[in-house]
Image (tube, rainbow, N blue to C red; front, side, top):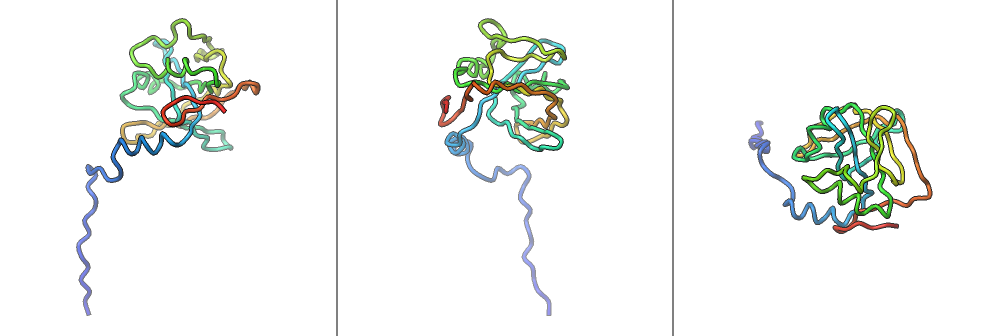
Length: 173
């Protein structure tokens, strides 16, 4: 007895399955996230951007990840950086979050307060905490890259509450 199996058509790698981009954004606007500014200097001056995609990946070794759009002005610099800083923005740092989310400006110009760590990495002032990270891997993911990094050093001000992003706006606890 022979069984006829209908031919299997593999999905096209160029098809856009899933939901529309606007719906995708709408769904994730309802998901609260912590706000960080990732800063780095690959030898051409400090760069940075606001992110809500920070995730802890592993305790041993201590690994984190975050996403960055390949169209972001910081991407060509971050792609060459071996280290960076994840700055945990405090509840009162909405203007700093907006500064680091704005294209075409010098994000490190006044009134931004910042300094360099002993290794040369830029770290922002007044933040709730920071992680100095070493880039381990960069993974392509659609129109973004996922940066996987090892935490090498940390600092925390437990008296400062976090800045959150929810439903299109910045919030605090």
